[in-house]
Image 1: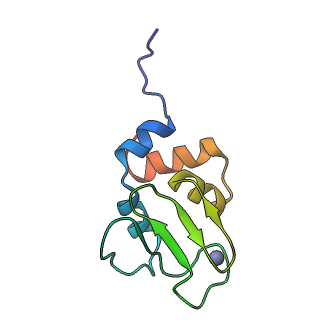
Image 2 (image 1 turned 180 degrees about the vertical axis):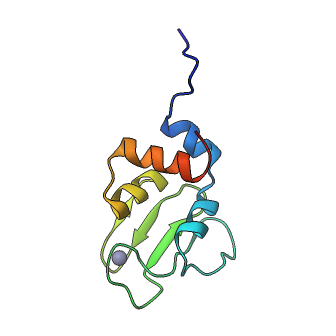
Length: 102
Ligand SMILES: [Zn+2]
């Protein structure tokens, strides 16, 4: 049975929000990406980073990886959870609100 209100779920958020757009908005020090796939994400938000080059983001899958502090994760939802200390459902809500996906 379907409900009238749209359920907030990870699948629809990830379908509607391109990792490329997300990371370019969330990572102010990220250089303009030259291509899709893994790109330089600028300074790592997970450690006190002052040397760009260690933090990479995947503009297709939303994955991220830091070679300096070993932060790595699955997708943009995990990124937000780790960076802002959010629960899964809080991260979904934040994404939906900030990107008008709700
Ligand atoms: Zn790091």
